[in-house]
Each structure stands twice: as structure tokens, then as C-alpha cells.
Length: 285
Image 1 (cartoon, rainbow, N blue to C red):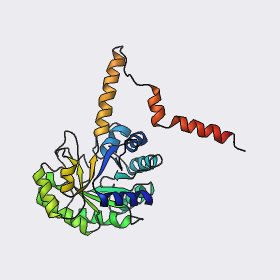
Image 2 (image 1 turned 180 degrees about the horizontal axis):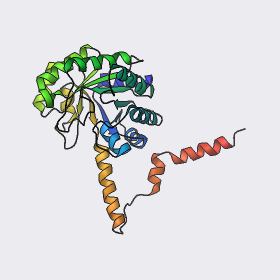
Image 3 (image 1 turned 120 degrees about the vertical axis):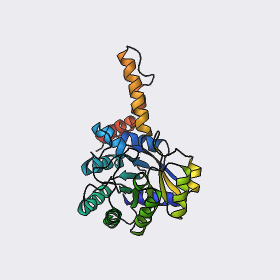
Image 4 (image 1 turned 135 degrees about the horizontal axis):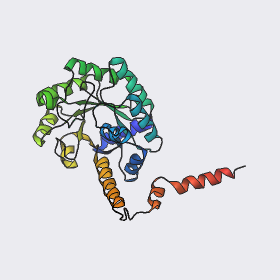
């Protein structure tokens, strides 16, 4: 959606954008209703929710494009889509960007891991060589149909080759068209400062993963260091898992599992408005 992409660009220009992660339309609806300016389609959350598997490169292009299409059909806020490695060579990367952008993504995020990739906060990651990584980002940049669509380029080099190598990759990603740079799995404020100084003036993305490799830092500190997108990719997933485990344990033990009413789901999904529309439409001449 070109309008959503332009909205996201304007929001970045105004300050830091916080984008909680989701995997489905319900999560995106809750994010929008909570007042956040954007939602992040998390590969980790989508792997777990859609397939019930870990984030180890098991998603397909159809999985991601389908999720984007379903989410953007029900929310008006911009959606940032994680497209992993682009699912193959240059032709695959080009098709991935075209399909996900057409599905309604305001921004796409591509990374430099070998395929199949793994979560950026897992061990034993492997990255492609720098020239292949740069070519992947360049193809993604050129594939966009709208000049408003944001390209986020992620490097996992910190854990593999060190901070200097990651900075060099980020610089080259910017040179070939990346709008936002994502140096994954930074391990300290000092590393963030180095990235910020080296990439001075370039919008950065920071990944706040509870229990991950990176410290969860305050938004104002991140903004001072050039971060313009702050994602929380697994917060809703973790809370959902925990709440469902508690409720299921209660049901198993014969206890009440919730003090909430079905009216909550009715309110979130707009059931009353939908039924009123149906009734009104049925009586139109």
C-alpha cells in the first residue's frame, strides 16, 4: 500500500517508530488498537504461529506474502515484513520483494545469512560473502515498484565476523539503496554507539528480543543513537504462549481458566459493527 509506505516514511522522519511484532491479523489489530504507528510481521512469530516450528528458515514466500495480505486487509497502520534471505538467488529476491510489496507491505527487511537462515539470536549463524550480500540488497532495492516502500537491510555479521565487518556491510548496503540499516544482535550500548558513529545520519533499526543477545534499551537512548525503528518481534508471542499455558493448566486441573468474557473478542474484532452492517445491507432497496 503506497499510502501506508508514505506514512511510515513520514513517521521515521518525525522520530522513532515502535513496531511490535505479530504473526496474524488479530495481533496486528491489537497493535493498532493500542495506538502503535506500525506493526512488524515477525519471522520468528510467524514460524511459531503458522507452522508450529522454530525460526530456522522453514517459511516460504507464500507464507509471508499471505500473512501480509491478511494483515493489511484489516489494519490501516503500516506493516513491516521480514522476508528472510529473499528465498533464493537474484530472481527469487526480486520476485519476493514484488510479491510482498504487492501484498501491502510498507517496508521489507532482507538479510545476509545463508539459506536456510535462523533467528538472529540463535547460535551458529552463517552469512554469505559480502559481495553476494550487497548484490542481494541491490536487487531488492531495484525490485520495488513504489519509491515509498522502505528497504531495511540486515546484517548478522556481528556474531560471525565481528562489529567492523558488520559496519562495512551496512555501509555498502546503504550505498546500493537500503533506506534503513539493521545490524543484528548487538551485545552492548558500546557496540550500538560504534555503529551509530560509523553510520552517522543513516536511520537504524534495533531489535528488542526478551532474553536475546541484545540488551533491551530505553527508546530515548536508542533515538539518541540514530535508531528510527524499534521492533519488539516476540513480545506478543511470548505473552500469548505464557497466558495459554496458564489457562490450559487451569482447564486441565478443573479450575476456571479466565475471568474474561467472549465480549472482549467481540469488541476487538468489531463483531457488533459487522452484524449491524449486515442487517442494514440486507434491507437496502
